[in-house]
Structures are given as C-alpha cells and as structure tokens.
Image (cartoon, rainbow, N blue to C red; front, side, top):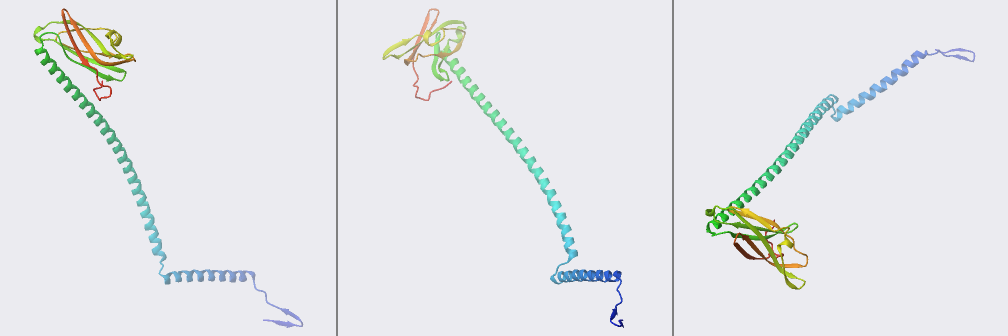
Length: 239
C-alpha cells in the first residue's frame, strides 16, 4: 500500500528475518529440486541407489574373501617350497650315500677278486713269487704296486728285500737308475702268505723310462722280472 503525501513516497519495510527465510527456502527448493531431478534421471537411466549400495557391500565382502584366500595360498606356497627344498636336500644326501655305497661295494668286489687271485697264485706257487707288478699315475708323479705270494702249505714267515731298477734313456743314451735314486729306501717286507707293497717312483727330469726291473731276494732265493713302463699318452690306471 502506497500513501502519497506530496512528493514523499513511503514504502512498508520487509523484515530481514522474512527476507533471509525466503532466501533459505529458495535455496532448499533449488537443492531439493536438483536432487530430485538427479534421482529421477538415475531412475530413468536404470540406476538404483539401494542396489548399488548392496552391490558395493557384496564387492567389499568378496574382496575381503579373495585377500584371505591369497594369504592362505601364499602360506601354502611357502610351505610347498620348504618341503621341496627339504626333499631336494634329502635326495642329494640319499644320492651321495648310494654313490658312496656303490663305491664301497666296487672296492670290496675288487678286494675279493684280489684275494681270489692271490689264493690261486699261492696254491700254484712253489716258493716266493711275484704275482703282479703295476706302475700307475698319481697326482705327484708315479707309484708302483707289487704283490708277492708264497704257498699256503709252507705256513712260514718270509723276509725279503725288494729292489726296483728303472731302465730308460737319458741325455741321448741308455741308462739305468737304481731304486735308491727313484724310491726313498729299499723295501724290506715280512709276510706269511702274501704281501702288497706300494711306493712312489721319483724319476729324474732327464730320464725317459722304458721298463722296470723288479728284484726280490729272500734268503737264498732270488726272483727277478722285467715289466714295461706304461705309455704316458695311454689312459692307463690311476691311483
């Protein structure tokens, strides 16, 4: 309502509370309207807020289960790895034991063959004899192996002296090297049925060996045999 008094115009003032209330109501209306339009648009598009929340909860639960399963499988994998390592260690130990047992069996088999040979040789022997002599390679040079036998029926102890002589070439001519220069000392043996004598052969650098003379002296009996030197290029026995 406007009252005209001359040129003065008087308007009724609106309370600030009413004005702020109207503004707030307008803002609320706009927000609710916008939210309603958003929800309406989602509903029209086929989006269900409640279903989405339910699906989210289910997805979180599935993620939790999968994480638990991953932890369980990781623990199982670690256990399997430890079992595999233990199995490998046990297999390696068993393989080494079997190899050692096989080597031991072969060694015993060789010893049995050796004793059978010695027994056969001693039965055929009429006195002290050289059953076998062999020169073999060693890491430090050459070594020899000599087997002496005598008849079992004799049932006597024998004392013998063994002397080795290596014959070959040195400085372009044939030369002989006595045992004293090739072996530390002369070998004195004392045995009843058989004896296996082993030792080193230290050859001078300028000697090319051809053969070895083995001489065994026991009382008034002398046994002498000549044996060819093994070819260094051949794959002979090694000790």
